[in-house]
Length: 230
Image (cartoon, rainbow, N blue to C red; front, side, top):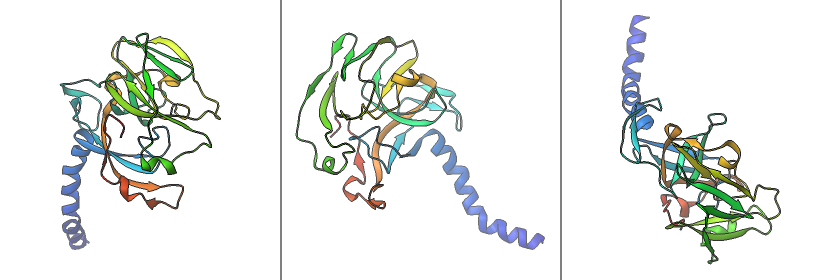
């Protein structure tokens, strides 16, 4: 029996060493996140694996949310990965409001500190033509301060289209999905504590079409999540 166990250990040892090295890196440096819903359409689609930079804002103790060092805070327009304050679910949303900001929605128009953000209509990128989940979606470009990105509205759905004004408490961040009528976000569960923000999403690694038997969307592989949403 001892010989068998020794043989098994020799076989498994390289994998165990790899796990010891990779697991802390995945926990504290770089990670990935599967996106199962359309709440970030058209920026991120269902069935996409996104890359998460866990060093974007700070260095955490592996396997915890405790900070060893902090060098930056989430910026307005960042796509952040965080733990939901409602139930701890890991979510991906866009940072809309910073600590101390006043956030308000008036019939889908976003106001930040009393200033309405500007919206423009542009021809959607080619990949948008196959992702609509509503018969008459509205896709526009929202200028969130200096950041331009796509947002999508689904007029036929019941949704929270007016909200606030709401003053964000200290050390909290207001998150919203880019698919504004199909996102469970800070409008419902409140702002996210700073220490529950895991990192910043930077790129799509892999993409599979959940509506077409997981066919690969090769044009979305290694697709950067630019802050301008294009």
